[in-house]
Length: 104
Image 1 (cartoon, rainbow, N blue to C red):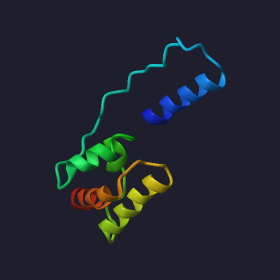
Image 2: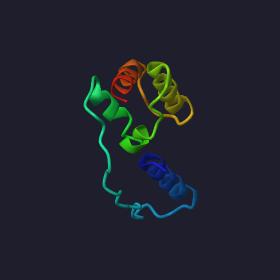
Image 3: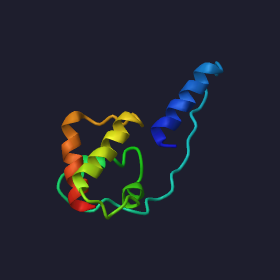
Image 4: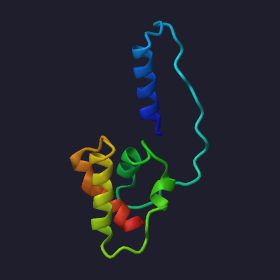
């Protein structure tokens, strides 16, 4: 579960169970990153959008032998937006797809 979802879940639980306003938030430490996004065109856009919700490992585990890389990555980015609710700006989609297709 990603950080944003955990925070939302904690806030919802606090409201639902009527916890006192002074209740301390749940905190936890994430494990260290084990992978980084590779350098490439539009790296900053990909970092700002992709690794805000999941680690670079998720990208690294995707298939490498696809016939049309841009089509594959466009499908993945759209899945993140429409299935998982990723807050990616429409203007960033093409930049992210370009980065992923060129780099992975």
